[in-house]
Image (cartoon, rainbow, N blue to C red; front, side, top):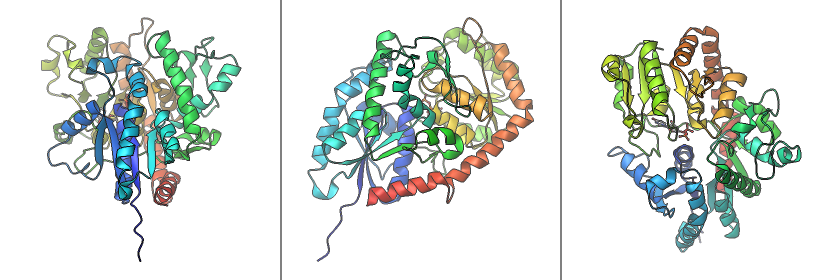
Length: 455
Ligand code: UDP
């Protein structure tokens, strides 16, 4: 008699934000190729966005079971308010995910054998534990960010923050000379919303860290080549990155908005190493004066540029005549195929908000970064780029908090003429590829993880 083994079935639960969904989709696609069944759980809003952003006939996601649950929020406006989404994630989603697991596990051959959850939704990991399902946490941010989180008790003990996470003084935190630094004012939970929201995010982080500590795997979208010190400090972190999959058409999976692929043809027509790519991820919002300052800087730079301006932002006024004046050498799109752009030989540098995914995509392709952090872990990532890896420059605000056109223009000029910086960026790219290549540590870790899922 032959005993049929059930196929390994992983339920993937991302935090419902673009920079969390994309890398977990990347990981899911790798697992699917290994014969592992994936059920990917989105909120209803994100599920609909991902489905409608897919180009017709795109087969990239056909092997992943995309399912949705409600997050309990009524309007898309509500989701953008700091703390609203994380609150909803806690209130409504645990029960819905539990129902989903029970429903799927009703069929013996389809049973979920592992829950792979975003590190920032610890309840999904707790739920798996309660149900007796194996679990793994995935961190879409840097290992240094995780180490900062793990150091919270030490920060409280040393009087750097109080028990609610509020900094007791403004000072820089750098855990070692080869780790990035961050001001206490820019700690992830400190640079969001008002005091109540900050406290809420801090408590959530502390809770998530406790759940994460109990998992079998703490995967991180990073590598020894990028962050050896952070990984040495917290050996429980297993780096498997950078995960940067996209297909031959430049589609990457899990986008909330349709990617405008026509800009790739435009890039083909530009000279090598000439284009400034400008994109600030999915959250960054500019004030109208700041938006205009950037317009002027791009215009005065006299270089070709490709700029992602999301439809909502494009309501901000361009300076009079701007569009007509730059039409010859500027291209604005609503959402780009960013991974494909950063591989393109025409791209010279990236003006970025330094989200971890954007940072990885840039440095893995040897593209120097002009760092313009906005919130969350982006200040820490900026420090990696500018102070530790030295593959980019920071855009510094003036005393009123504005990044002026003069500052942007001057840093664009500097980055174009700094041959040493460009050469460091190219060398760093080679180094990063060692980790993900055959025999590299990230590659080996990923293989071990896959074997564990299949075991
Ligand atoms: N992205 C994209 N097209 C765009 C802008 C961003 O495909 O026009 C992708 C980008 O490649 C990255 C993700 O969206 O994978 C953004 O993640 P990140 O961590 O950089 O920023 P967040 O949106 O979380 O602030």
